[in-house]
Amino acid sequence: MTSDFIETDEQWLRSLPQAWRLMSPKALFTERREPCRPDDVHLTPSQTYGVLPQTEYMKVTGNNVVLNLQGQDSMKHVEPDDFIIHLRSFQGGLERSTITGKVSTAYTVLAPRNGVVAGYYRWLLKSDGYIQELRTTTNQLRDGQSIKYRDFVKVSLPVPPESKQQAIADYLDRETAQIDTLIAEQQRLVEMLKKRILSFNDQCFYGTNDKRTVLLKRVLRRVDRPAIPGLGVVTAYRDGTVTLRSKRREDGYTFSDKEDGYQEVRSGDLVFHGLDGFAGAVGISDSHGNATPVYHVCEAIAGDDPEYVALLLRYLGISGFLATQAPNVRQRAVDFRNWATFARIPLSLPDLSTQRSVVRNFREQTARIETLIAESKQLIELSQERRAALITEAVTGQIDVRREG
Image (cartoon, rainbow, N blue to C red; front, side):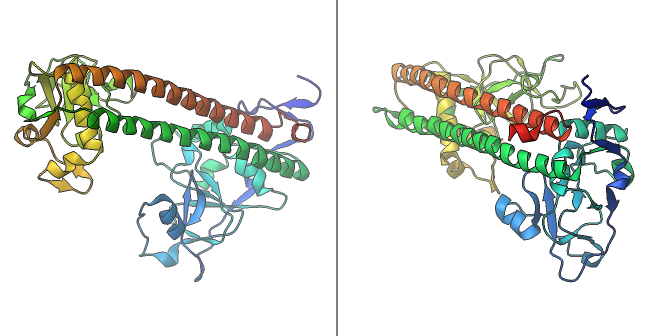
């Protein structure tokens, strides 16, 4: 430890520059309880977009929110530079408002005192170290839980000189904007590459001639095997992967002998999700496990390549064809849980050698594209890690932003 730093009792801070102080949040923020004013607009805080007027939030996201038409007069007033603690507080849900408005009484509104540069605390209250420390203020963590002012004030906050607060805010505004631009570019690239795979599907299934049209039941045989206790749960994902849920999700559920309708899935089975298959949730299983009753578990009848049939079904779902074949369309869901309905889907199939050639070509081309997607996702992950580390270093005084700038 150099003489330029002082040790703190706060584990998430470790040390602070000599000119900084460590203070109770009560000295920095008060809780605003002011009732809303007649001309206040309804605000929606979110981690992605910050604090927006509710109508603008719905326009940007395309999502409807529950309009609080009752009790509008009992909402809380919000001033520019106030912070709103919303329902994702333990995931970083402390949002700085730049506009005047009102929010539900379910939210906690923090008003900064004199000497507090809101731009600096915008970053501090989003830093990983602070969020982890904030989580220790209660033993009742759960998704969607908010915190109150009494919890917020339990975590001491660093206080740089006011000029330093502004310098850090300006530095992070500039540096994170560059990182965010890079992340956005890579995310657009990933989406473009995914569309390229779909475009390649067009070439695969429209580029072959001499096809025969048959009903699906002439190509696939539904198998009905009882579930085997002790095996994991197999899930069909919309990217065409059929695998054990535990390979993708740590919070997956466990098979229970008491649940009716579960069925055994073997490696090599063609698995189609009766409700999500139209969106691409169909493929060849790479695992041995149990599936829920919503799935059709099938074996290929001799004469056709099961992987080709799975790719074709996935393509027919994503392209919208399957939706035209379903008797029951509810909002976005197409219901193919009934085997008799699923079995009547018409398939246009080339000869077996052509099917195998398409599968080989598809594997080769998509493998190249998936490699590019994986590289882009890795760059996004590294950029996000760099962004988080940069924020933590700057708001705790571990880097000199004047020299970095």
